[in-house]
Image (cartoon, rainbow, N blue to C red):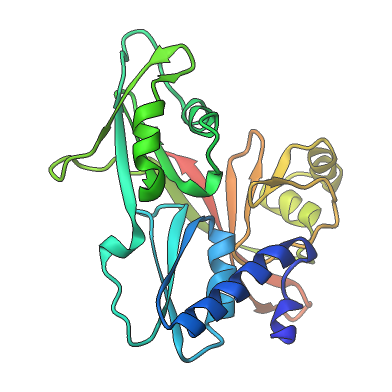
Length: 262
């Protein structure tokens, strides 16, 4: 375990301890444990840690296709997970689209203003007519009763019926390969965005860069597999895989870049 923890960052330590306590809970109670919604980096940490044990497995679900935020189930190998285990509810919001256009941050802001933890919400999908979002069952009724407005817009929240289809993600990850001299944040940004190191560093120190949803302003910050990088004005980048080194000792890197389908 010690050997494994070295691979993670210092500020991920509290989450790692949380995962280890979940692992003990499943082993002691010999029953599955359901987590809150986790981002891809957190899920990567969970599978890395739980993957060390032959007696435990993990599964995840977020209802939407390619959901970014998903709940995970950590369970003993004898157990067969079913959809109900993930305790997910999808809500839809109809609103007067003629007068206003709701955006993702508006919806997220309204949900957080109900005083609930971000871990209780999954993905939020928005198109021109409709908003859909996933919440944990344990807060679903509370959200249904209390989410009556988003910004200045009065909204009505309803559970999605079996027959309704879930919104598809209008996003597409395009895969690219790069060779980089190191996994430093400034090196990766300048390589992928085809810009100078100085410009990349200015973006970072100017607080325009997030790694796994947290602002990072250290140019020498080391990226790892599974990280999701967002650079203001340039969309998002997923560090998918490092594939060994070239003869000149450069790192081969597989990334995904997010493009919005228009």
